[in-house]
Length: 159
Image (cartoon, rainbow, N blue to C red; front, top):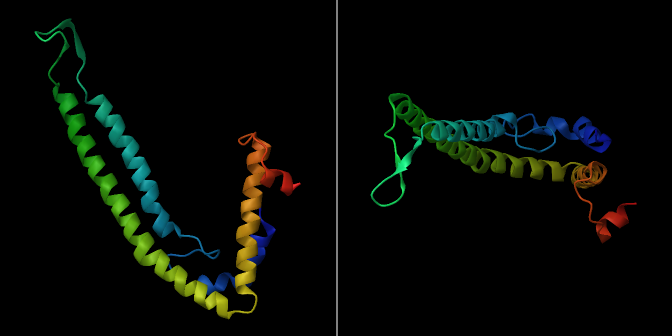
């Protein structure tokens, strides 16, 4: 669902975000920031898959303590474990870079952009209208998709 108020805001005030590389025209984190969050999720999933593949099979016979014996890891499983540790390390690095870019780059640039926007005629009003409209559109999309079947007072006030 497109948001005409957002498109209007970008058309009128989008050029204010041009000097800021960690900010989109609508005031959201740019792809430069969000890329590391995406890489974190992907590398975490890959690390978990390799960790599962590296686990040894349980033997059918019982050990001395009554628990099933575990076979030792094969060379392939050891390789998968090492790959899993490396990829998990990359996931930690990616979330660290994302946190740094979000707090050091995006938030500082967002605050500067918001100050410039507040000095512009109608900028803050248009920004708040855009945010409120997007929240309403998201709520309506949730209602239409059946995600939120419980009717609350807020949902009733929408219609």
